[in-house]
Structure formats: C-alpha cells, structure tokens
Image (cartoon, rainbow, N blue to C red; front, side, top):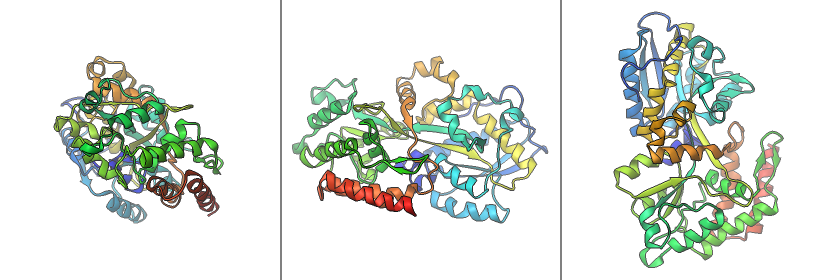
Length: 423
C-alpha cells in the first residue's frame, strides 16, 4: 500500500490507506429497516486491502440477518474528494463513506455529516471495548460523527539481516534517538550503496515526531499559537541535518515514496512507515522487525492516523439504520481480528489486545503495542495542508539539501507559519 494510506491519513492524498461467516454483532443489532434494504458505500481502498474489504462486504451481504445489501464503490482519493461534497449538496450521496479521520472536521464544519450519537444504543455495539485513544477521533466538539474502522501510528522498521551484518542485535531496535543516530551511522555503507535510515523532506508528519521527541512543537492547536521558535526545535533540526549531510545516512533528495523500494531491496536498513508495509515485506521474504518510534530527550510520540465510517447528511432513516448494522458488524471481534491479521493493522479492541491470538503473533503484538504513543498531527486543523506545503516541507527540503543552516531554515519557517496563521 502507498504511504498516502497512513493516514487513510495525514496529507491530502490521505483520503487514501475479515470476516468469518456467521459472525454478527452480539447483543442488539440496528433495525436495518426494510428487508433487503440496499445502500451505497464509497471508499478509497484501491490496494490489496480493498479486496479484503470487499470480502467483508460480500460475506456480510450474504449472511446478515436484516437482508441489508451494500453496494461498494472504490475510487481514488482525489476522485472521492471531488465527488462527495457535490453528491451531498445534491442529495445523491451514498449512505456510507469510509475515509481518513483527518477529513471529518471539514465535513462537520460544512454540515455535511449525520450525527451518530445513538449508534451504541441502537446497535448494542460495545463502546467500552474500544481504546479511548482511538474512539476520540470519532467525535467533533463532543458530538459523535463516525465509528472506527482502523487506527495506526507510524513505526520503525529495520532489516534484521543488515543489523546482523553490522554487528547489531537483530532483535533489538534503537530505543532512543541517540541510539537511532549511532545505529544509522553503523548501518551506512557507501561501498554497497547502503543507507542506515530513510529521511525524506516531504514526510513532514514523520519528521515532526523528532521535534516532539526532544520537547519541541510546531503549533498549539487550541490557541493556534506558533511553537516553532524554540531551542529544542533548533537542536533537533541540527541533529537531522547532521545525519543527512555529514553522516550521509539517508539517500540524497529522496521522497517518501522512494524510500519504500530501497527498504524492500535491502539498500535501506531502517524505515519509518505505517502498518501497511507488513504484508508486502512478508510476501517478499524480508527478515524485518517493527516497533515503536525511538524516544527523544523528553517524549516518545508517533503520528496517528486511521479511518472512520461516516454517514453523509440527508441519508434516509432506513439508509442510516442499514449503515449502522454494517458499522456494528465491523466492530465484532472476528472482523477486527481478521482485518488486523490480514492487513497488518494494530488491534484497538481491549478484548483482542488481551487475547491469545494477539499474544501468539509477535509482529501484530509489537505493532499494537507501538500504538500507545500516538499523537495527533494537526487532525482537524483547517490550515494543516497549507502549513505542510508552505512551511514545513520547504523547511525540511532546505535542511536536508544543506541549502541553509538550521538557524536559517527555522527562522524562515517561523515567519512562514505566522503568515499561515494570520490568514
């Protein structure tokens, strides 16, 4: 899956990221209205995960007791972004949509979503089973507008064979940023065109993690206060530039999408990415480990992402109740477990997290544990994309190219962020 799916996820492309027969929701189920109620379902799962999602839908259509039929339409993220607002305004929207959690606030702001506060009562789905750090992204200003489909954070991947060749313990990831820097240097071998750590200027959300880790920040979302100008951020920018320019641990001028194949072919020893990498790496036979983002001097955080099921404004009562039935079905243990096992995404059901299935799957267990340090990267901030493109990406581009000192790039970024805030 492409990086843009992190964040079903954090950037504009992020509109983009099983079930066993007979596993319906326990307790009450939503009254799906008329028998054979047919509803439309739009999503952006264009990769292999879309085929798994289609399996879920097909089996649900066959087995659900209410006779609900879901007609699923998969499309590219940019196409959904164009079609959905127009469809909502003309009353032709689907009854069910699946998209990134970062998009929900914009649709709520324009009155484009139906509240779903009665979902738990109507369906009997177990709200208490969902981890709070996942459930919070289903609410805007205290009102529920969605239910969770998947959740993820960024993680550190490492090539165990390259670790062993460099004399490092292949089962031990770097625990701190200092460890990360020393490991990256040890794993860099110019004679083999091998790099220790992938760093990309356009992966601004991943790069933000290093600022957070050392006690820095970018923006106070509640007060919209510029937090870039700090000695902590300056120190971290210097650390990053040293790794790229002096120690040359990362490919020069690499974009985030160019790092994936380098890790896959053994030219890159460590990669920051999301859980969508797991199945591909397994299929390629890569001997890899995956775990939490290393800790800095102050914090240990990872960028959060995920997807919610939402219901467009104007959906009929019958359509809403049919959508509820499928949304509740998704939250059953069998569906959640199989999605995690087949797609590599972490578990966020408390029952699953304490169950034997997770304990017996080391990679899935490690991935799930890594989600506990998730942090919101500007989800719900209306100027988030502009901040990325006008402030942070130019800052990291100049920094990683060695075109300016950390002091200079930070000074320019502070001014640029002030300008974005002022708009």
